[in-house]
Amino acid sequence: IVIGAGIAGAATARELAEHGVRVTVLEAKHIANAGSGNRQGLLYAKISPHPTEQTELLLAGYGYTRRLLADLLPEQHAWGGDGVLHVNFNEAERKRNQALGLQHHHAHLYRAVSQQESAEIAGLDVGSDGLYWPQGVWLNPPALVRTLLEHPLINVHEHAPLLSAEFNGTAWTAHTAQGSFTAENLIYCMGAHSPNAPERNISALPFRQIRGQTGVAKASALSAKLRCAVSGESYISPSWQGQHCYGATFVLNSSDEAWHQHEESANRAALHDLQPALADSLFSDGLNPLAEAHGHAALRCDSLDHLPMVGAVGDIAAIQEVYAKLALDKHYRLTAPCPYLPNVWLNTAHGTRGLATAPICAASLVAEILNLPQPLSPRLKAALHPNRAVIRAIVRHQPLL
Image 1 (tube, rainbow, N blue to C red):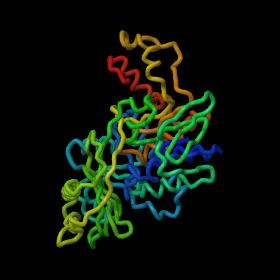
Image 2: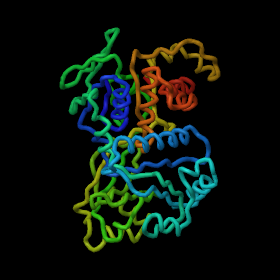
Image 3: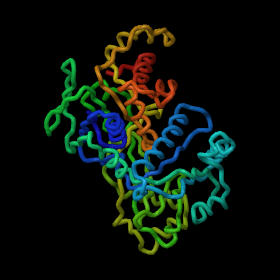
């Protein structure tokens, strides 16, 4: 049983189904309704020039999702574009992108470009140099999510929020308003609603909710020339079906999922900072009036260290007891086996990078469940494990439950 039908849940269900496992997906609302419901998202990797865990994950996930798109949606009706151009919108960004541009081991993935080359790539002057990802794309996340779920071994139940779950010694029974469902494994992929999970060993983990809103506008004669997605402090995608998607706002620790006109104004101002002529062509002379504006607003789930939480779910109270000596000495050598919940797993907290990270994390989680070769390094597996938050809390004398 997979809880949640966003990008993480859909990718997890598909990985299981591809290995012959029958999957029930329980979705509280409808498929791709929350963070995965944006009209046009960007697939590229905003990375550090240093070999951090996040850089390793983003590069691995970027390639994984890019191949997934080519395999599942080869006709490109819901994704495409001529790469992603990330402009140097301030001095810190210029230094970061220049450092990346000097690294030759990833030259096939990205390269530094001048302002003139940026204009040639984008189809109009973006007013800056930057870093160009030639295989980067815009994509419609709901189309990818629906395609992932189209498999004979996957059965999706919408409007079926999980109310409770119980383990009888051999299997889990999940209770919803639409009935009860039984399976050997229970996998939580609830995104921003992870803090509300009925399983307290998940809801107690230190998640952060981030509100984001994007806008949609009819293309103008100038904006229709845009050939690739352009990102900086904000982003805009090339025209698809005669419309652009742009944004996005970033509001920490918000539980508000409504669409707001003042955030639309903020997105328009940010787009004007990114490319003034392009913004003026979309919003001047009565085009796309603010009163008729629309788009998508949703919550995203993040962790305190900005890495996803992927792996087996531990029994927090038991872990705090078994590893209590860590509170006295954080270097204490652990020998006792970790007390885990039976067959309960987590794939969440992908923040604003879920298109790049969720599918490969799904592959890693399924490999762990089915004892298959791992697509992620041991270093990365350890960095993503949910227990890191529990251990950190013990060391810092911070109770979770």
